[in-house]
Length: 116
Image (cartoon, rainbow, N blue to C red):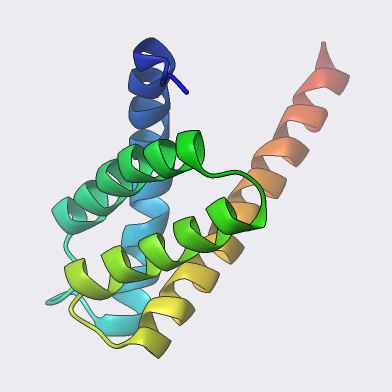
């Protein structure tokens, strides 16, 4: 299976812009500002996106999802210098923060549509 490099480049850029601040905020909340640096969040997202895309190209279904989950936990554990449980909590908190931001932006969008 081939990997579309143009789509991968766009995915890396979009994921870095959207996910890095969310991952950084959740990392700061759990492990503190000394261990959770913004550059660590950026590297985590870039490496996770690239390696996840490669695994996704070679594996399908539940196997690919499980490998990508473990990959993200390993990256968070490594870059934020924490244990497995804290890496899991950081990841879950990042999902919650991302969902809250998405809901708020969606509500703002619906509110703006009514004024048009």
